Image 1 (cartoon, one colour):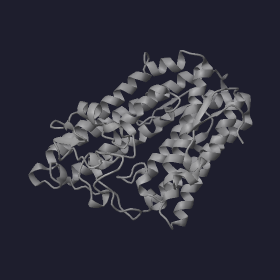
Image 2 (image 1 turned 120 degrees about the vertical axis):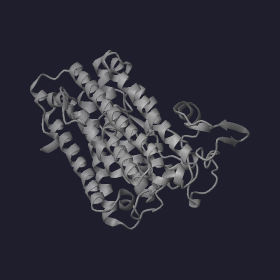
Image 3 (image 1 turned 135 degrees about the horizontal axis):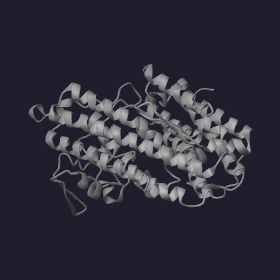
Image 4 (image 1 turned 180 degrees about the horizontal axis):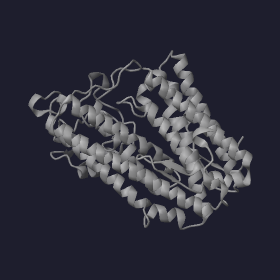
Length: 422
């Protein structure tokens, strides 16, 4: 669901950058935005390569230690990547590509073994329990799929969204997450997935098909690195994504930026990733559901919104990319509105951090959205309310800058909650 905004809708991390002292210039804002995008995808690529090296060690020498190291590398890789989600929605190249690396939720029975509670069939997905790891050849509806060799090309060209089903996610962070953690069978109770390292050990194999499972995991991380490398190129000096943004009229670029901020804030994060799961009290609706890392993913999504608005990004090595910002443009027109939006962004970031603190104290995100957990539900709802409220100010920015045609994603969970239960 999308709605187009044509008219006004009914201290700390956000301290003003030095760029505020300079004359606001839309072209400079777009250049800095593209530089931040490039840095974020470079960091995502770097941490994915570290993950790839950790997975190579796990496959070569399966142990509790190497599995733990691979999981830690996956968690670290999510930090820069989630901050890049602010570049979605407004940039078609990013939107068309994103499903390769971060699509969710997924029907994990396509990939590997699952608990009997998962079921054996789906009315909408013939590949619901295809289990590619266990089956070198799969037949569905009279069609044969040759999965004897699990390669990066096989995952991307054949298996991803096979049968035209979006839930058949075979690639990206979440396929890798499932292979590293396994299913989280705890519902809204404590605990994440708990796949044993012996699932990758041919000499002491649990779960069966250990060599093929390792082959799948290796192919998936190889593909992730390849896909991220492609996106780094898109935002480089001669990249198409950068060129599309900077090569046209500045207002078109600003529309792209605000479409991305508003859509991530409202329809995607407040709606599909948070309110839907809270309405249903359903742990299957949390973003990083196998690893119980959702609290961090939501926090870094919000931080990505902050980065884009303030024109500043802290890289994984601690250095900063910063310059002219959307905040500068807004401040030049309406200092009060800039102050208002900055305050709301900080309030929402603080609310996301409170969710992280609850998780650090032993209450994971899936527990926080559980039915009957009034305090946890309230913490999540407070963050959702912050996201919705900051979107209202983003809409005011659109009006203040005189931009037409900014399109913000909606969500039934926010706009038509009754439809969620039908």
